[in-house]
Image (cartoon, rainbow, N blue to C red; front, side, top):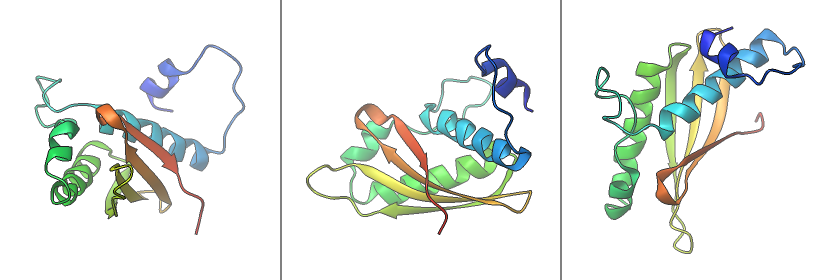
Length: 133
């Protein structure tokens, strides 16, 4: 168990998870924090986090692919349990103009996590685990 995960858990009785399931949940938790961090907030890690997502919205639809590349690089650099990531932009619908990605994260333990990521207004990243295909 990672120290941060242990410290961030509520002080209540938890149901024990399978170690593989626990690792997947921990990775998803960290990716949520990582994609909601803004670049420049950590002085000692100047490239930690994403650029201002509001700026990305101004450059749509072309900037969506740039953001997908940023997300991929960020995951591969700052999530040590992921060996590689595939980040695929989902077509933007005119009625809601929301940036979305399907992310496949390949873990060092041989498992794969499929995620649906949606950037809400204000740039907040919402990450949901997709059902197994």
